[in-house]
Length: 155
Image 1: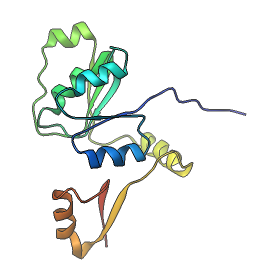
Image 2: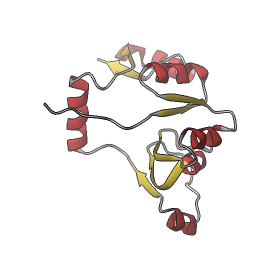
Image 3: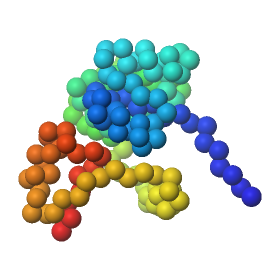
């Protein structure tokens, strides 16, 4: 019998206590509230090394700098959100051997793997459905922070 062992720990970094609590309910191992000391807290949780992989879903308002500062030497900074410039000296990338990877969407094989994980109950989806006619309400709720996870329009 084959058993899969995951040796990863998930550190969720959020600016909203409500969003952090929700993310922790979905499977985060550690939660860090953005308060100006978040980089130090992540380094403390990783025994001073930083995270091996950081996924930045925001990409603005300082999140890229914060994420890069949380990334370990030899680690990967994945940028999904967009809006600001990524500013890092080339020498810092070279010396630390950090990798910066842009992600618009995944590959077909990654989508297949994700669907397999979801089918096995390993992925928890968090979404709120809205009828297509309620698109403006969905946008309003997103703007007000009332949506947990994703807002999905259903025809």
